[in-house]
Image 1 (cartoon, rainbow, N blue to C red):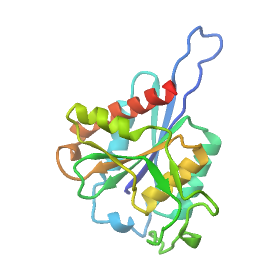
Image 2: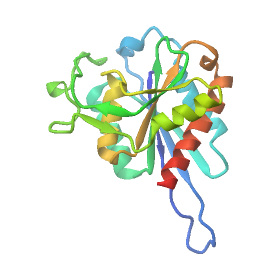
Image 3: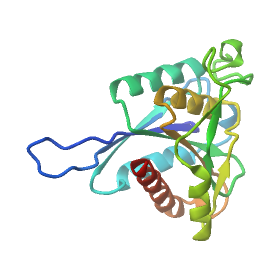
Image 4: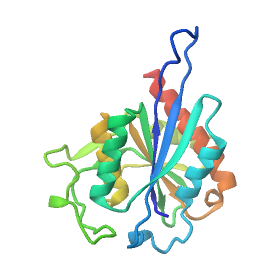
Length: 222
């Protein structure tokens, strides 16, 4: 299991013979095992982000939300291929990516992804060409979701949710930037804690449900 997961959310209308509109969300959490291990996350025998993905698939996000779990590899080019395939075939309204943040006790909302500086090798011992995600791409891409506002909202409720502008220059950041590039900013990344109360799924899952639904609400209000 590995530390990078992707949730793809698609909003669409119900058939025209139905007199109301319904939000339908197809959520795909991607995680692909590798014989070479999981890079710097190999010490985590149980990956909370994958457990959270499975938990969200089981619990759902409401009656009008469909959740499906899959896996992404800790492999730069293969991760890009899988993300591109999803955006091409599903054309989601919003992508939510998740990974673990070793040592953290909070859920971290990442505002942006960066194009340069990927010098850490993946599980196959490879760095992306030129140590960048997209040749000729912008240095930084931002999500259209206002992470600072969301983090302040949940902090006001006494919850451990924090804002960040640095997803780490490894697969998490790489995946996030590429998804933002394909999606025109309609992606988010959540880093999940490995310590403290929120490392317990019973505490984490309700918070993730609330965070993702708040993101969808913010998106629909734009």
